[in-house]
Image 1: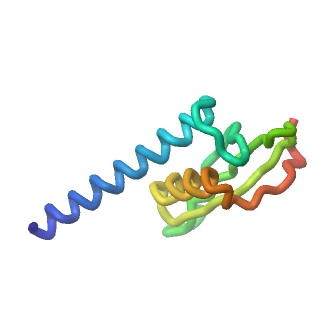
Image 2: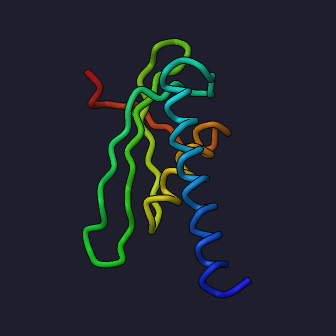
Length: 102
């Protein structure tokens, strides 16, 4: 396999993984999958400096109705979405009480 073809194959796998992560997040938020904390929204901020990190702020609600917030960062957007999905699904996010929830 040539170098260019190998890179294209890797890029294709990356896109598939990103698409799958976005699909999983959507299925969860739509009520089709149960995770430890139900995600109700998230927002993404781009890097503030060149080659900086992306940051996602995640809002969730637990079984008792308490509102929580968590954060996840990564140096590229694809890894950010994959990491968000994986950590939320596995219960690995560090949730804090959302003091700004309405």
